[in-house]
Length: 127
Length: 127
DNA sequence: AATGCTATTTATAAAGT
DNA sequence: TACTTTATAAATAGCAT
Image (tube, rainbow over all chains, first blue to last red; front, top):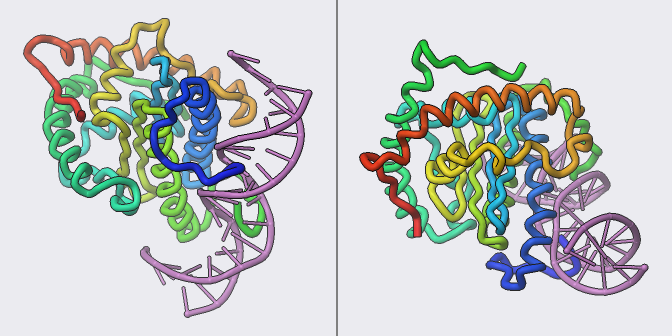
């Protein structure tokens, strides 16, 4: 979208990169919001700007609730990255490699987060 | 974008809702991917389908790494929801209410996740 | 339920201010 | 350095399979 067809690779010019980040971040939040409302589903989005500042969005519930819902899923219910068309996004090779790393990290973070659902820790929900 | 201008509210027809979810989920993943590459930033996206199945995307690093990066941020560095234009997305009233809930949940989950960075628990990173 | 097809609406890259 | 405008690329709603 724009005057020219954009190649998907890192924008080297720092100013352009930050301008593009700002525009596309807003677009992504809007799309995430629309998805959560239209389809009545939980959506969580976390983005770090080029300068390290964080932006988040969550639809339906708090972002912590959605993160907890994810990390506590049993293994066989966990989604795969790039359910759409992996080849369209990046090489299958890289995707598979990332999957292995994910597997390890998930075990660790799930273990840490188990306390999140213990009786002593309750979370509120956005209606 | 389509034959008619769509109102952003829950799609009541179940079939239409699932078709829309499928299409827009792929669009959202693509946008998140493009943002992570163009701007070289961490992006994490979690979505639950109407039937409860999860889809995730993460750019640059594993989704667990990005979630951990978020929950471990000091309070003053945490982003606000809807940094763009809250009024454009939903009522400010609702956004403010959600912010209060988030505040409480964050305190809880940050406390639980402090162990994540302890010496005994190390995470791998995607290069 | 899933995929392909257009007419339209949206998003946004550059240029302008 | 940031907003506004404009031309163009993309996304997608409703239909047809």
